[in-house]
Structure formats: structure tokens, C-alpha cells
Amino acid sequence: MTEQQAAETKAQEAAQAEAAAEAEAEKARQATAQAETEKGQLRAQLLSQFNAVSQTRDSARGLIVNMSDVLFDTASYTPMPGAREKLAKISGILLAHPGLVLQIEGHTDSLGNDEFNQQLSERRADSVRDFLAEQGVPMSSMTARGFGKTQPVATNDTPEGRQRNRRVELVVNGDAIGNPTSANAANQAN
Image (cartoon, rainbow, N blue to C red; front, side, top):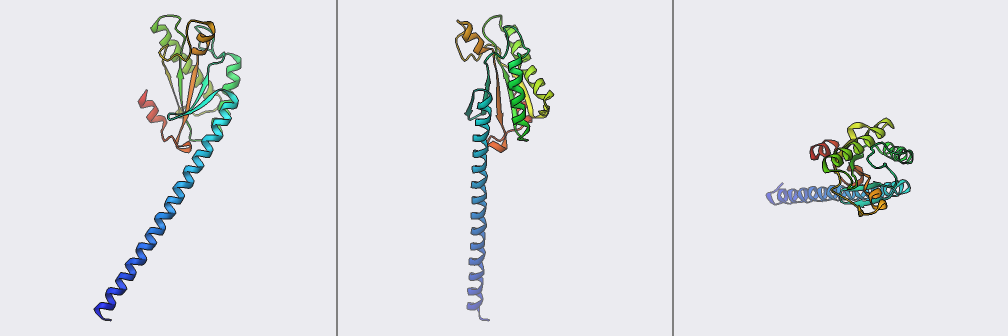
């Protein structure tokens, strides 16, 4: 074989290797696109399922399930019967989709002093976490945090507004729905 033939053979082999690498890269791009499509479909499905239980919105933080409608009495952190029923339904959804991570955020109205409201919001978040754990949701996939009266969603000047502010928000995320996070990362953020 002459030098020219050897060079041409090498060039052909290099071209074939480049074409094979490009084909593999295209396969990887298609697989990534398919995975993103599946995440989007699961996210939409979960949004619909959570909305059937309680008002839920999609955000950059994840799916936020707002548990404000008659969740707690004033100065109480024990979920009311209707709230426990909703939480049981939410636990069923969570259990059907392993790998989801839940941040539980407690809130209060403005009645009471700052220290009392902070402790109350933490107890509300903890009581929801504990109830979900009793329903079988892994404790390792949940974090609980209280915000006191610092993040109202309604005016505290009316009984209705205060009722809306006495709430727990469940932030649902995880790799499966396109919000890569872990319970450890959530714990470190708290």
C-alpha cells in the first residue's frame, strides 16, 4: 500500500468515526429531549392531581400546593379533619411517584407576637410533615420550616384574610419533574 492509499484509508476511517460519533451525539440529544418531554408530562399530570385536592400552582421552585382553606384554627397547629383528609389524598399522590421531594412551609396570620407566630408556624409545618409520615411518605423526602407571619398572602385586617394566612404550603419538586433537588439540599437550605 502506498503512502497516498494509507492516507486515504486513514481519512475514510476518520470520517466514519466522526459520523459514528455524530450519530451517537444525536441519539443522546434525542434521549435528553424525550426525558425532558416525559418530565413535563409528569409535572402537568401532578399539577392536575394536586389541583384536584387543593389549589396548586407551578413555579420555578416546584409545584406549590396551598393548604390554606380551613387548615388550622387560630393559634392551633393541629390540622382540622378536612385538612387531614386532603393531606391523606396528597400523600397518596406522593407515594405513587417515588423520588419526589417535599418542602413543607408553615405560615401564620399577624395575631400574636413574632416569637409566638414563628414557633406556631414551625409547629404547623412539623404537624403536616408528621401526618404525611404517618401516611407512609418517607421522612427522608420531607423538610419542614416555619415562616411566622412574614409571608402573608392576604390582608390580616379581616377574618377571611387571616384564615388564608394560616396555611401550610407544600413545595413538591425532584428530578422526575424537572426540579433537580434532594432532601439533603433542602435540609441544608433550612
